[in-house]
Length: 560
Image (cartoon, rainbow, N blue to C red; front, side):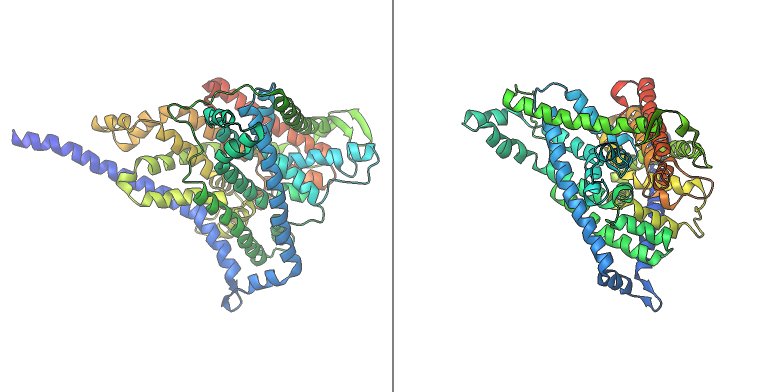
């Protein structure tokens, strides 16, 4: 009898040991992948920037900061990013306040238009502005204006509407959760609308404003597509890195500029994590109320005109893309035609779109699986792995501060030689998309796991299920909606990404987003619009189909 008792007691212990071994093995595999595809490329970029003919040196940085043209490009990047950030956050604040804190009509339309740029290539806004305000634009040419979109003002205008969704999402989430009774208390004490807005509402939204500003600043600093299309002679670091690699094949200079570009982005990322990360956006407590109060007409209608006008303008911007694909010759021959969909200006035809779909599907599958496993290791295996989960979490979130151009340069340097030789294969593109966009997916999966009671998994383990069986049979079914949302997130980014993959495409495998840039630069905006229209149709169609299959709001595009 005692032997039988010992045998029964030994089985859970043995199962627990096997459970821990599996957990450690999976965590080690995840950490190895992160070290290879996140840390190693950054080390290669940093290393090349510090290496000279005589060994380690700061000569490359000395040359950068002593060259007035290059230093001015850095100042250009900081200036355009700062101005774009201020305007973007201000516009997003107006839209978010109108949608979440007022009773104005048309809020659903405003919200949908504010989010539209999330599912399009980040430079379609620039393409639309070229159609409107370019040298042969509908307005500049039609009205005889001696003005064009190219230059500092063009970059700012394009970046505002390109990165508006990220700021809008953050601010809408913050404003929607502010306790209405706090505003009512201020008004009961004699505060007017303006004082209440400034001293209560915006004061409580301050962490969200700071977070939105820092995130938009990083996006503007790392933006590549808009400056290269409408920047004209106003150069920024992202486009200069591209010129050094593609035009001059000077990887040392490109690496130096990449490190210089990383510094302000990483500083903004760390500042955001330090100043905002430990503070809550939510002011909702058990007794709080977030119901929208009646809005005075003197506030409601001006907000309706302002936010409705902005939303309508965004709709017009994206409506110009399919229109531009149907006009025979923009600016001179307005006859409608499908000739641009023949893609006669390029020998590649429509294959870049097919390649983009292939990349998007592979990125969606690989990225979703890896993000879910990584989040599970971080969120549910801290007791087994201890401090190593903090390392995994930090490296998982690190790409949020890495510009796409830096990812592109780093992947060229890291995976152009053995032991991990990926150059010239689709996998270098897949890994660049997956790991560059990894932080948002991991955070989404972690947040979903926090909502699942650990007792459910503990019950499965107590019944003899191993870690793999518990994850696949218990956890995954509860994460179906999140998994599909993560898939959509990676799919969309695989379809529209450009700043990293433009360095990594290889002969015979071009992508739709890169082909759009090439067509604009070669003087074929109609073909570029046709490619952009197809990409938009594929992305929107995929989201709608998945929502129909899985059900309603269970599938959404993840938010920054």
